Every structure is written in C-alpha cells, then in structure tokens.
Amino acid sequence: MFESIRVKSAAGRLAEENLYEMVLDELSRGSRRSGIWARALSDSEGNEDKAQALYMKYRVQSMIDEHTIAKNRDAKGNPTEVKKAETGSTSAWQEMGGGMAIGQKLSWALVIIFLLVMFMSAINSN
Image (tube, rainbow, N blue to C red):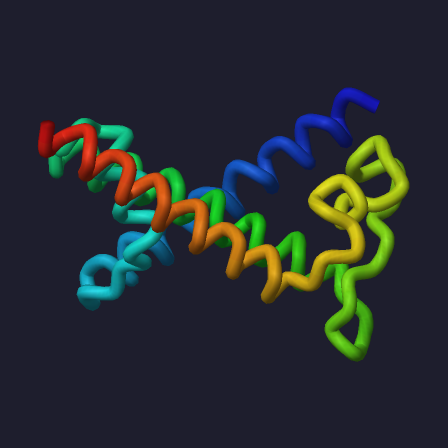
C-alpha cells in the first residue's frame, strides 16, 4: 500500500518537473500568458524577479487545470461528471457554476477583472 503511494508521489513530482521545463521553454521563446503574468506581477508587488518565479508556478497550475478540464469533457466538448474519488463530489462543474457555459463564465470574469482594474486605478490616482 505505501509503495503504491510512493510511486504515485514520485510520478507526480516527475510530471510537475516536466511542466516546469515546458514553462521555461515557453518563456525562452518569449511566450507569456498576459493574465497569468498580471497576477504574478500583482502578487509580487511589482518585483519582476519575484513575478517571474510566481509566473512559472501559476503557469504550471494553469497547465494542470487545463489538462483536468480537457480530460473531463465528452466527445462533443461538454463537461462530464468527475469521479467522486477525484473531487469528493459528483461534479466539479456543478461546483464551478453548473449550467453557465464556459464562454459566459469567461465573459463575467473579464468584466470583473476590468472593474477591479478600474477601481484600483481610481484608488491609486487619489
């Protein structure tokens, strides 16, 4: 039993190492996701060295999230139920908003981000 846990942990660490390598390769080619970079820059309070490290961490998590979402879609691209063993619930999509389409969620997220940026700009200008 403990051996299978150790093997899964080792495999997970190796997979994560590969993801970090992919992110480093993206950065070396000049490819950077602006939303993730903005979050990293914000969380580092403008320190670009810290932002670079945070960006890599956030981008790896983004890749894991993208993989999780992709593997839980049916042939038509619709979300499917996630196994209870993976999430502890019947459907991760139900927890994230249920019937709202992904496009609608992204639209609302962009509106909220825009409003937050405008609010922060107004605060900083005073």
